[in-house]
Image (tube, rainbow, N blue to C red; front, side, top):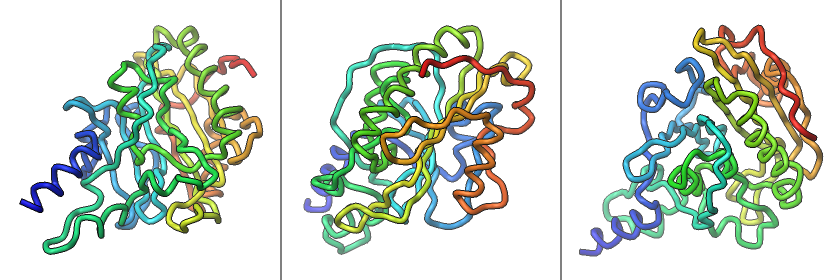
Length: 272
């Protein structure tokens, strides 16, 4: 009976959403331009998640269980919807598997962030797949999982980053309304942690879009990256963003979108 109660409690905390999978290109590849995900890393700390709600997948997340933050979330965009914010955050029970004979509370947050990690931390829960770019109310609700959030400077989250999210939602609705829009938003692990020393505080937030035509070419694409402070993010090409991310992640190369999709691409003039 006790174990059953623990499982029920964990289900309620999770909101009944998300699925940890071995290959999210196969399980939820519809969120990746050309069906190919951004670069993944080697190591058991990384998990691939199809973020679902009520049995429907809404976006995909690549999650770092060691730093307890996502690497990136990938999603589709159609038009600005104006969804209502849920503001009720959930965890992903499949990341913290309950061992036999272990108290339920002992394993909460072993491989992921919890709501308590953000209490009096000085940081907001910064969405990667954001409400402003959600395609339905269910999609908006599905973004409120801690596997889709990372500690973000409050002024940055409510300031320049929010402006960027809104501008992208509004203007891509017009620029790319006859194209298939794919967006990837991610973070770079930093050198700081939250006050309880559990969750890594990203040094940078970044995002990029690809407006794909029927010939699998990005007719419009752009990248943005900003230090986790209230500073205007840089507006750069996707190629330049990938070069910068390779340096920051300390890898030989990093691909946000399949290189065969990229050139030639045009640049929509997003508002400042």
